[in-house]
Image (cartoon, rainbow, N blue to C red; front, side):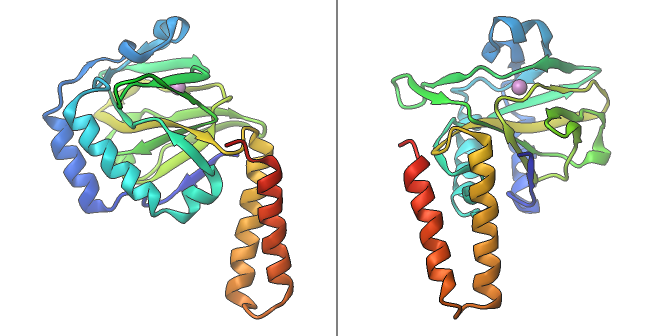
Length: 228
Ligand code: NI
């Protein structure tokens, strides 16, 4: 399931991020790439332990903790601390699949995070740059994603994807991965659709007795499938 989530960050937050990132210690993006993807990757990135990346990543995690759509779609178990990248001057990232496991070293150890979902949070407006589309190979074909500043896309970590060359301006984004309680995309999609319909019914017919039963089905499926 490929899901855009609008306005994860407010316009004020995006402006603050842009200001902070302008003074970031940008480095070659290959620092976090696996062997194969390093061949395809050409961008700039903030190092994982960069204080600006840590601070802004914390703001993103707080925003996600309040975002019901994110929670319902991702059913997050662990979130890899958000990273930041920048493309300009024709830079791009060719087709690749993200590494299956990333090691989160932010707490001193090396906590494995299975990358069930990938997320890209756009930090500048689509009209600020040409190119820089995130192309994702989905079961419905190739999807082109280029969202408003503050919007985020969630997609299965299993997907082949690339970023097309940025031929004018610069593209700033945050990207990270989520280990979900549900490893399989098909299960996450079913639970997201079930939860969305329960929420609609709760608004429209809040007193209907079958809602309690339906909510029970949701939790009993989650109990059966969740991997904690
Ligand atoms: Ni990737």
